[in-house]
Structures are given as C-alpha cells and as structure tokens.
Length: 248
Image (tube, rainbow, N blue to C red; front, side, top):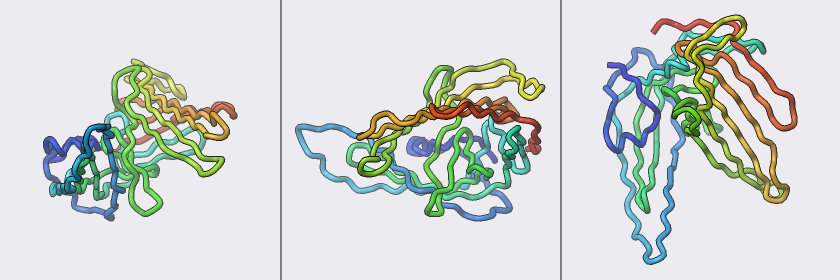
C-alpha cells in the first residue's frame, strides 16, 4: 500500500511507519550521499571508549508521495512569467544512506525509496534532494514545515580558503498563512508563505551578501509565486501563469 512519509530517516531508529510497496517501472537507481548528524557532547572528566558502527538495513521499498503544497506527480507541470517551466517526470528508485551519531556511537541506516523526479531535484513529501557532483544525491532540505513564524530548517556550512574563507547560514521560515492570494489574475486558496534566507560571512572581509527568497505555495497546486533579492540587485519576481496536475 502506498503511503506518505517524510524524508526524516532518523525516525527509522524508533519505528518503521511505511508499508512496503513497489512500482512496475523504475528508470534507474540513484545513491544518496551519506549524511552525518553529529551531536557534540563535552566531557571534561573522562574519554568515552569508541563504539562500533551499527548498520540497519531497511528492506521495504516505500513510495513517498509529495506534500499537497508541492504536488509533484509525474506528468505535472508549471509555467512561470519568466519563461521557466518546472516539470515532474517520473518515479525513480533512490538508495538512501543516513548516519546518526549519539555521543561516540554511530548508526547507519540504508534502504531504498521511490520518489518523484523533477527538473530541480527529487521530492520526498516536504523535502528536496538535489543531484550532487559525485553522481549521488545531496542531503535532504526541507521546503515546507513547522508552524507560522517558526524557522523549521537551518544549515551552517564552511566556504572558501585563505582570504576568502568563511561560512554561510541558510534558514527556512514558515512566515504566513493566507486564506487566498491572487497571482496573474487567478485566485488561489490556502496559501503558505515560506522565506528562505542565506547569509555569508568572510573571516578577513566581514559580512558578505544576504540572499532572500520568498515563496508562496497553494494547496493542491504547488509554487504559485517566488521573489528573490540580494543586497546588491533589484528584486526578481516569478509568477505562475498556468499549470497541470496529473491525476494521482
């Protein structure tokens, strides 16, 4: 039986919520890069003894549907005012590997899932996985989630070398819920506003650019409007003109 599920793979450590299922046609297998979620614990009194890595194999093949606010079902498409078209192509089987560290012990979970493939990545309920340079997939980023005015996803990363060394911070906030919103003379209902912000800081230079995306998602439609702005350029706007959601 097909079931919706999120990409939060660490939940598998507690219980297995998805029912095993399969698709008749799978185009190819894709491997997701291993993700390490490390919890640092300071211990000033003793050194913890190393512990073996535990491997857990999830043998069920689960089909993960997209959120009602993404609607990425194969055959669906969205055309925007800047000439861009987003499309969902097919279902693909993806190999997942996720590592979780608790103190000095590591647990690695391996398994396969069937995800919808779009022109901008693979969608797993409310998350997106992007193709990476080594032929696999990146760690999952949440596109939706949380409560209003809540930052539901954040990531810290290092950038550059030498005088250009520094770090960046990305955050996603559920900013507002709108009962209705008009875009390109069409009224959409049950709209959520998500604000993505990326800030960079360079150790030898100071504060770098700040990038802000504001995305509006309508229930049973997907992305209906997107704006982008950095601190050096004017705002960019993309509006949904027409769309088709394949029956599911």
